[in-house]
Image (cartoon, rainbow, N blue to C red; front, side, top):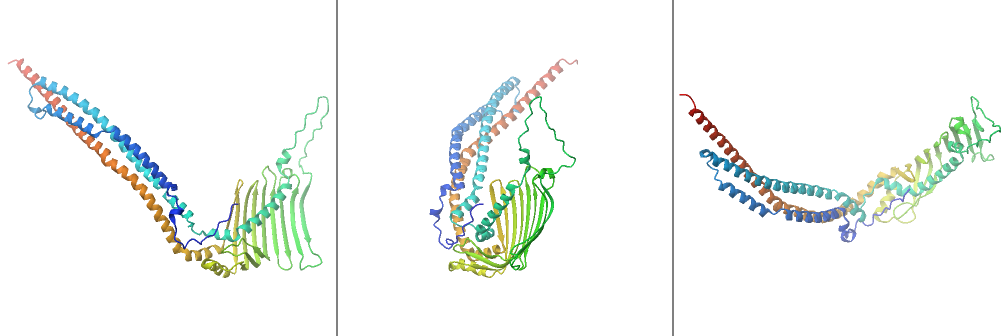
Length: 479
């Protein structure tokens, strides 16, 4: 069921030597930024080799010079159709060069854009580990917040585990000797008789009964008959007790009242359902006004070694399905008194004693569950909040200061790595990316210009051709 937590507050008031507690290189965020820095260096080294901004600028300048050499400023005044057709061919050739350059530049620009988008995403992912790093660093510095459920586990955990183990041993012993259906189904097959020999065939009755069955029984008993003040008196009922539950078809049930004249009273009831392959058993127990006596606890530097109470009430329910267990227990005891082996250990120890000394009644709740072979025990009590709050008030400022000290250190180390990576990204944004962006805009401008001029030339050519056709028509027109 796991080890109970260790309650250690001795280091909260000390100045933390964080450098010796925390290895920066082990922080997940720092590892992520270090890795990202390496990735950023190699990625942008690749892009600097792929993108030669000066070469692009030279190519753009050559294209601009070619466009200027065509002298396309006065297209509307051009009269020579042959010359216009020749210009259109030259414009098409230049346009093909511009489109090829435009495709190349836009491809590089889109690739760089995706690279920067990926870098920003990876920066965010690296930062997402920061909270986990803080929690791990605080654990290294023994700065885990005192959880209220820790108090009950510390006080009563070991004792509860021992008692639960004893109860589970008894339950396991009872369940071991009760028949279940797989035992009946697991009997060996009857071999076929050899030929020419007879075989008895049994036909079941309409109502089949098991070989052994107690349909209903009333129970009564007493102990220490010579001294009734010490005697326990038992009364109860038992139904459906059989060695063949699947045949009987009903679970075994029992109800038992156990009491003493002095006041102790116990009620035990249960249901044992072994009709199927997986046994399903339930147990309920109530005890009122019983003597709790002295119960040893784990003890320790701050906590009591034992607790005693005059009277107590207990309610327990347990459900057992196959190997799965679900136990719940409620305990109310009063008046309670805690015993210590040593003097109070400083301010914290005195607070623990003051709080526990002021309690007259103990309310304890426990729950045990299992998932496979992993058992989990939860404990809480009225001690939890009272003690935890008092201790928290005392150590709150020291705890906050120490946690802030750790957080500032971790944040500074993480920010240092983050700024390094962001610096690499921003530097390449202002150089490689900005350079490609300027070339892209310049190429787009020339592309728009040459498309415009081509359209103007084609419109001018069309107009001149229409004018020529009209003149020819006028020549052949009858007077």
